Image (tube, rainbow, N blue to C red; front, top):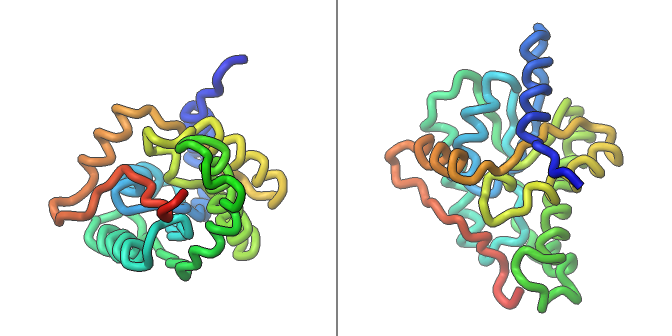
Amino acid sequence: MNKINYQKELEKTLENITKSDIKPSLLLHVCCAPCSSYVLEYLNKYFNITALFYNPNISTDEEYNHRAKELIRFINEKDFENPIKTVISDYIPQKFYDMAKGLEGCPEGGARCFKCYRLRLEQTAKMAKEEQFDYFTTTLSISPLKDSQKLNEIGQALEKEYEKSEAQGDNYYQRIIDRRIDAIPSSEISSNLECKQNPGY
């Protein structure tokens, strides 16, 4: 079975958007400022973006609030072509604990992670439908620690379920990670490739 090149699929979507006079709205789930930096820079000229910070898997409210503040600071300090809105969801780790019940012993990158992908993407898709966004997607596939094929499979399933278009992407590791770091301004924005999920999982 051939691996789908989701980056090429994204480029087709962007080409069609470029031909239109209308700039669609995009709800972008973000895990942290560093991972969002390249994505926001890349997609900003094609979409009216709202960045959604929803990550109940993060360990401790201090870490959650730190990441949220860094995201807001990055967006405010970066000179984007089009304004970007931010939505910071309340920190409710019980959502993660309920999802992970029975999967505590799963290795990193396994079934628990896939369910965590869906937890965050489903909240994004649900909000996209409720607030009538044209597209939804996530920065999660930027990380070399995440399974982009699985993320896109989940996104496609949610697209059908919530009747919203998923802007697909792929994790071309070195190119994306290098660009991600270059896009961060020299303002000491916290950078961490780790998921920082709740301890014991």
